Length: 245
Image (cartoon, rainbow, N blue to C red; front, side):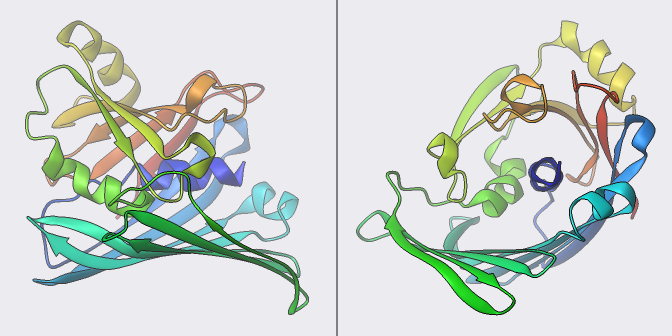
């Protein structure tokens, strides 16, 4: 369940170019109600940037996951108006277990080094150092923050393919689809009619029973996603994320 919260939150942030922005979201799952929250902060300067996202489960999800939390940090440099990742860190915790993943991107050699560590009650119990089998300028955070700039025509139906550090289970693959006009009413029915543009993002992972993890998104006039829905989820209905402020 928490993997979905992380995935959907990444897809929520498609902001305008700004020096600093922040946004908060609530995630709910059918009759279970609210299952998680997230807060993201982007600080961007002329030559560098930092993205900081904190996620936490709530309610029943918190109980079932032993109070699971995640903290994602991306740091890097600016290149032609886009954020390029140099370092990406993920810290996950639940109960007395903490897992840390650090990715360092070598753009000159086009390699990504990953350092994984797992701690139990503060004691290191597992450590792995590997090199990913793909290279990307984006990590999962910069990819979604860059989308609003990369996709220049939001009205033209098209399928975009991307790669992102942190998505090694699918060899970095992430797909974004701008729908055709005849499919727009379906988006408006599920996500409301107040969006500036709509898209479907595919993270190529099975989340619950949803094939490929297809997320329908409604993006506001400020370039930030206001609502997202994961359809065809078993047992309790759709999973929804809504921007609260």
